[in-house]
Each structure stands twice: as C-alpha cells, then as structure tokens.
Length: 113
Length: 109
Image 1 (cartoon, rainbow over the protein chains, first blue to last red):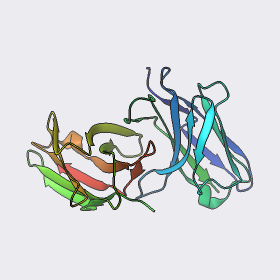
Image 2 (cartoon, rainbow over the protein chains, first blue to last red):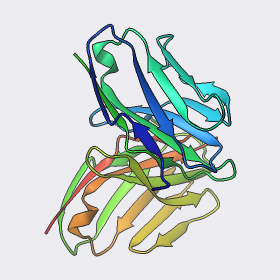
Image 3 (cartoon, chains in turn orange, blue):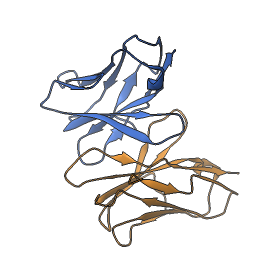
C-alpha cells in the first residue's frame, strides 16, 4: 500500500498525559498537512510542512501541540498535557508541491478520558 | 471558521436516483475541490475545478462552479448504496484548503 499511513489508528489516554501520532506520507509528496476533525464537522487545518520546513500553523494549534517533519519524510504530531477537548480525529494529508489535490490517511482517533 | 458551507446537511435517496449537493463560499478562490469521507475514515479526493472552469465531469460525478454566485454543486448520477458517505467541499485560495461541514448522503438499496 503506497498511500498515506497513520499510527496509531486509535489512542485512548487520560487527561494530562502526552500523546504522539505519526504520519507517513506518499513518498514523493513534499507537502504534508495535519488536520483535526470533530463529529459533524469538516477537517480543520492545524499545520503544514513543505519538505522539512513548517510553513504555517493555525491559531487552533496551542502551545501544547507541536509537529515535526525532521527529514522531510514522516511527520509526528505531539499533544502535551492532553485535555478532554483534544478528543477528535487527527488527519494527515500529503500532496505534491505542484498539485492541489490532497491524499488523506485513515486518521488517528484520540479519546481523552 | 469554515468558508465552504454545504447544503443540504443531510440527503437521503433511493439507489438509482441522482443526488445534488451544493457548496457556497465567501471569498475569492483559485479552485474548489470535492472530497468524500466514509464513516470514520479519511477523505478521498473526488474532483477539482479551477476558478476559470464552469463544469467538470468525472465518471458519474458532475461539478459546476459559478464564481459570480460563489457557489458550486456536485451531482452524483445513478447513485449506488456505496455512495453513502459525507461529502465536503474545500475552497483553495492558497495552498491550504478550507473545508465545510459536509453533506451526509445516505443511498438506500
């Protein structure tokens, strides 16, 4: 399977714990996006990388959230001191620099208890 | 805030019927995209229409774009039970698309 993959698919954590998610984009894609989606809503943009550079971050991305893409390949999204409001589906997508179409991974569903 | 807003929020039809959903947006765009999301899964890109295009087809999908009215429509012809999903429009003014809340389509076999 050469699509976008995300791990883990599900994560249940207690409030206050830190969690980290991983996204492996399609290999030749140099753009990588993170979104958050809650029930009944569309994906909300969190942050965007072009190669290893993080070019834009949403105001939704509080200082408890950090994302990296160290070698311009896979990316990680870390949430520190999780809160119940962080419960959501976290989606990763990738695209070519020259194209607008995004390819999404299956998402990581986070539940904070 | 979400720029693209889909209408209706929910649509229920019988297999074989056509399904039409609409998207309205507020600011100028370079392109508009439609995505499908099956329950609890990631999004799948369906079709992209650029601001200088008025209509585009892909299989059973037909998308129109009216930039003067800031609206787009997605028509699915001869629907199938497998088309049951949520459909989102995403407006692209830059390289970051903005998604609406989606239309939930149920196709009854």
